[in-house]
Amino acid sequence: MDYISRIPMTNQHVYIIAEAGVNHNGRLDLALKLCDAAKAAGVDAVKFQTWKTELIITKGTKKAEYQEKNLNNDDDQFTMLKKLELSYDNFQLVKQHCDEIGIQFLSTADETESLDFLVNLGMPFIKLGSGDITNIPYLRSVAKYGMPVILSTGMANLAQVAIAYDTLQEAGAKDISILHCTTNYPCPMNEVNLRAMQTMKEAFKCRVGYSDHTMGIEVPIAAVAMGAEIIEKHFTLDQNMEGPDHKASLNPEELKAMVSAIRHIEQALGDGIKLPNESEKKISKVVLKRIVASRPIKKGEILSEDNMTVKRSDNGIKASYWDVVAGRVAQQDYSIDEEIKLYV
Image 1 (cartoon, one colour):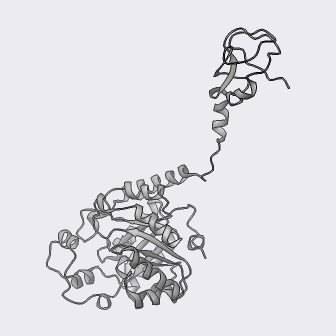
Image 2 (image 1 turned 135 degrees about the horizontal axis):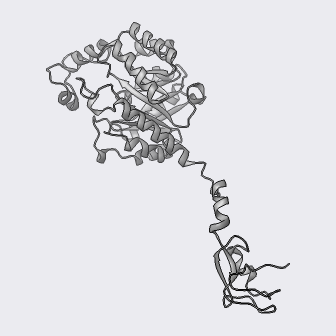
Image 3 (image 1 turned 30 degrees about the vertical axis):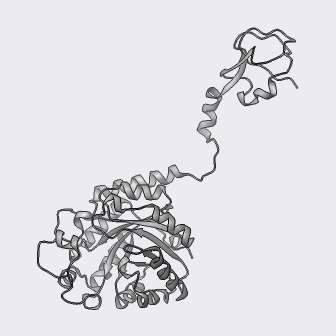
């Protein structure tokens, strides 16, 4: 089943996910404010991340380079994530708030206990982060729910994406969408490689989208123009807050501008059928050129390029019929610029 059709809030073709992620800094009040900001920006869904720190990481694991840069402390990843962890009770309140304000609540689970919690909380589909694309046991656990799946593909080559995709399918997933992603915060432009999204669409014949970590809004807009049907973008209430992801996130006004631009691009893409629209039909009456006399023509003359030309005119035969008119005998006299008539 098409998961987009299962989400009442979605009235647009491109499904836009505002990735709050861990930008709540472990605080429920900030998480609720992020939901409000996402709603105000006009996105389809706001997404968080749900985990039990003890179940996803070993103590002493070093932070990623971007995390070290964005956090001025000696915490390892375990300690960092523990500070950012929201409880299940908190997520129930966040989900309730989203229902009340009319925005789809989503969250990515990082282990099976949290996955089960989120499914029971009422997720319309399962979102898999790039960190689990090689996690075969977890992929199989996800597929067993029989729900639609969105798979982010950062840090993976095409063969690894294929293994993950096949694993999900073989374990029971029926509707899989793939997001191109570069796992770097922020992602420099020369590492985006948007064409890889189209490569995966060709390879897997499925719905594709783009999960963006670049600065600004240009790249997700370009992704939509290139065929993305799902866009995921990090956002924050304040880019100057302390935390691993704030600096690579949009502020609320930027998020709103991105949504507006994507909706404009959706309209501009159209249906792909090459036809003049209604406004063009009106304009064509005075813009497309017609066949007129280039000099006075006497009845009985042969009509040709010697006595005819094409000009803009309110009336007359369209220039596209030139070869039909040329060579015929004039059935009347014509003055200069008079529209040539076709007698049957």
